[in-house]
Amino acid sequence: MPNKSIRRDLILIVVLSQALLAAGLVFAGVYYTHHQLRSALDAGIQARLMSVAALVRYPEDPKAPLIFERSLVPRSVQKHHPDLYEIRAAGVGVVARSENWPVGMQFDCPKVKPRWNFEVAGVPYRALCGSDVPILDREEGQADRPSTLTVIYATSRVEMNEDVRSAGISIALASLILLGATVWLALWGMRRGLLPLQELAQQASRVSAQNWTFQASREADQIAELKPLNEAMGTMLDRLQKSFQQQREFLGNAAHELKTPVTILKSTLQSLLQRPRTSAEYELGLRQALEDMERLEKLLQWMLRLARAEQWAHGTLRRDLSPVEIAPTCEEAIDALRGLAQERHAQIEFNAEDSLRCKADAEDLELVWINLLENAVRYSPEGSTVKISVQRDGNGKAQIRFEDQGAGIPEEELTQIFERFHRGDPSRTRETGGFGLGLAIAKALVEAYGGTIRASSVVGHGTQMTVELPTVAANG
Image 1 (cartoon, helix red, strand yellow):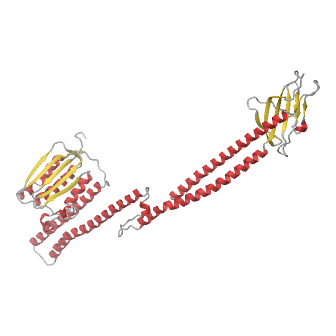
Image 2 (cartoon, helix red, strand yellow):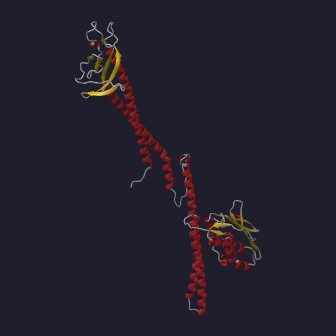
Image 3 (tube, rainbow, N blue to C red):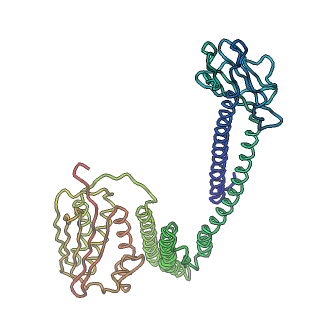
């Protein structure tokens, strides 16, 4: 199947529209010319009919037939096709006929349409019938003689048809010339008009993983129809560049994170094989290898969970969700981390409004709250208090807030804490078992459900995490 071409379609539309316009002009021109020439021909026939009728007069002898001055009949305009005429009088019959009147041809004057067309030996004629034409040369004492005539006069239409044909050919040639000029102008205009689009295509073809620069020409940027396309392509490339960079960073960070437990596991197994060991040494080494394997397995699970959450956030995966109560999911997260809070002698205060529901997976919400609450408890001083509140904001959304009394986060790090594999305190990674994926997963899950998450912090006074989620009615 041949590829579609906008230029070819535009050219075809222009040619067809101009051809239709040219055909319309030819038709209108021919029709108008024919109408005008026929009107002029009818006027000439009318004049000749009256001229011929004026040549009939009464004789001096009342009993003699009407006299027709044939010698005074005007000559026909067309030499090869002389005019035809016939004059009749009531009670008398045919008074006179043209010499070339066809034998046996008779006409009855139509009352509705006194003009008509006919052919004689293949020659087209136009006829006019005049009824009740008065005899102008009347003599006294002729009251018993007819006073009116019926005159039929016909003129050949050959010259008129030739004139119409010539006019049609002239109009058609002029229309074809205009059609050619119009098509050429349209082609030039389309080529010039599509030039900025071709420049955009060339600019887009230069975009690669090493070059994300897309700069539309000034002419293309000033075209109203192309400006939205320029802006959309610029926005798309910015997003692609960011996604590509995040993907590259993710792969690099994942490789780095996976390298550590794999290296430790390999070192542990190699040390077991260097020399014979006792059963207790083998058991200790295998237990350490198993711990490293569990850490590796947990890292892989978190990476898969993050990838799945980002797919949901970008709409790649669709799920049918039912409304869930937000407060119970927070309570489940608090129960899950109650042991950690007791170890650090931390208090958890929880306040919630009733009947705040959103369309989400309850386990996903629990995972978000666990990540936020675990960070609040781990990075707060022992014996401090972590506050959790669930309330409705002024826009009708559910607002879930986590407040701790920790050391706070410097302002330059607030924009990075939701990035993958980012750790605010790398020295505590092995101790706490963190991978720097918790907040990234929380952000991806919150955005997957149409919400937002933001952090605010004052160094020395603690950090506040605020999540906003769209709510649904109780019967939603």
